Image (cartoon, rainbow, N blue to C red; front, side, top):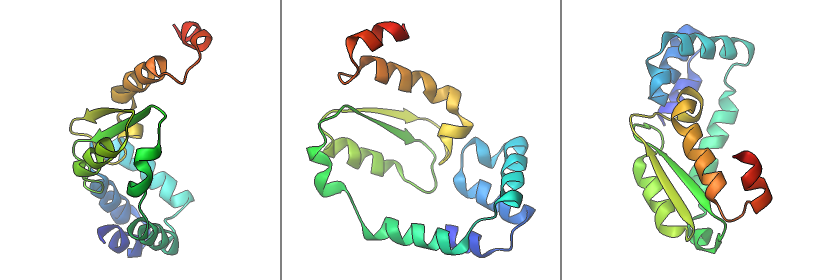
Length: 143
């Protein structure tokens, strides 16, 4: 519900800082990243109705009953310090996906794929190179 409260604040620097802090990780600490978020929010402010609808959708549906049917190799990336999605969610996914690989990104916040891309790019590349769904000729071209 904290995100709904943040979406209700008037757009501006205070909202940007509050949203960045709510995300955790580097985005909550790095002044340059917060400045970039503020720039983005000025050009495209948060849509309050959109935020509320997104939160309602997350509370009303779950894929848990069907995860066991996914046979494709799946990489589960878990942020170690995400204030929005707790680590237990990653453990639940890992317990239900039959062909899963998990990776914990320590001290990472909600936006770790953006603000810590260098910490996970290698993990993603190694997963894609080793996964069974990649044809052999594509594996050798990547090397």
